[in-house]
Length: 179
Image 1 (cartoon, rainbow, N blue to C red):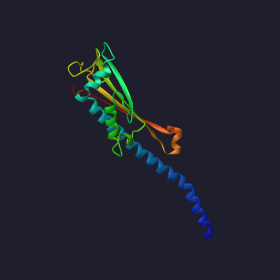
Image 2: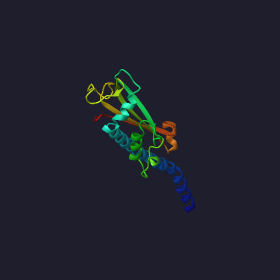
Image 3: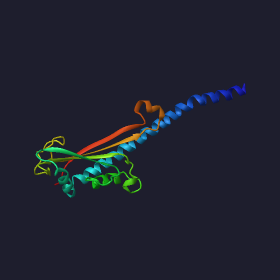
Image 4: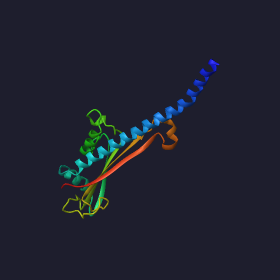
């Protein structure tokens, strides 16, 4: 009789272990998704803080220099961490915001993409004085929009048929320029 109860415990453990592991990995993925979401959100805010500052007016003007007429919205993208480019300073600050070791290369968002949208009129960036006061989606608006897209890898194999091996995470925010 004693030997059969040992076998019963082993069978019960074999039946419940996959369920417990699935729950544990699912909770881990859920926690990681909150972590990634916060990292992306904080980095977008930092990118936007830098992009709307008067120090970036020259960057906005250089992006708008190739346009004529308008008003028109022009988007510029950069990988995270940045490899230079027009919005390299903005992308570097966004990467540093989510860095785990104090360098842009140590960013949690490595592999993500930052997109900054400037509004232009006649080859120059729209300022507070030349804006139409419209919402950020209006091409004549005096706002800048920053967006970061970063896929979050899913570690729970059972979720792969539902979400694939990664889950797209994107945050977009807008703010009026300070110039």
